Amino acid sequence: FGSEESVCPEDNLYRIIGVIPTQSTVDGEFENRVKLIKVSDWIGQTALTGSKHTSSGKGYQWSSTRDLNWVTSNLNSAILNGEYWNSLEKYQSFISPSVWYLGAPDLNKYASFTSKQFYNSERSNIGGSKINYIANIGLIYPSDFGYSIGDFTNSIYENRELYRTKSWLYMNVAGMYHEWTISPAGNTDFIWDIYHMDNGFVGTNETYRIFAVRPTFYLNPNVLYKSGVGTLEEPYRISINE
Image (cartoon, one colour):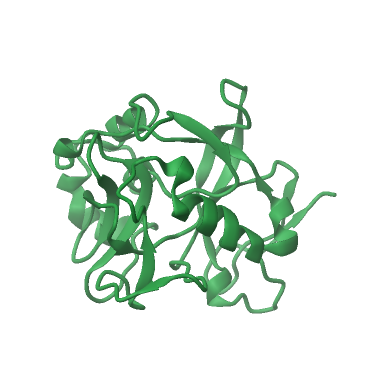
């Protein structure tokens, strides 16, 4: 995504989370759309240094003010839907503005929640100030990571070894690696994050910490398959039907 080079640069590789029922407007009709996430974390010009939780030592705070309102957070407005969005240039037309859900699953249940419980809570429990909003770019949900190894009835935490070996969303890096999700964790200053360490699981951390960020978005319905088989060596190529 974002490159026409014959060998896709590593920084332009994305993964397909799935074909997800998505709305363009709140309470609008659902439409199946392809949802993408960047393979590696994004490091823009305003990335903060000094992080012990990313492979590069750089990352972003979810909120420097410990505010759980994602809509007004700097990471949402200035970074993802500002700096990152502007870097896409002509490829902005490939992305569909979509509804993002801001529910807040209970942080005290991190070890017991199944993927389905996360999914339902993301869409039903009020987080910072709104339950949903419309934007071009967002972040992964806890449930996205949960469903990446299938729909299991036991909790994500209980499947840690499976996520490390089977999940296409797990980042196999040395050391301690944390990635922000879009989901607040109740009425505190904690956010749900993904632990990419010895085992992959979903936990919580304070908003001010500097963690990895992987931009996530939905493709427009007029984006078409062009070529490729979906491997690292021969990734899918896409075009847009103008």
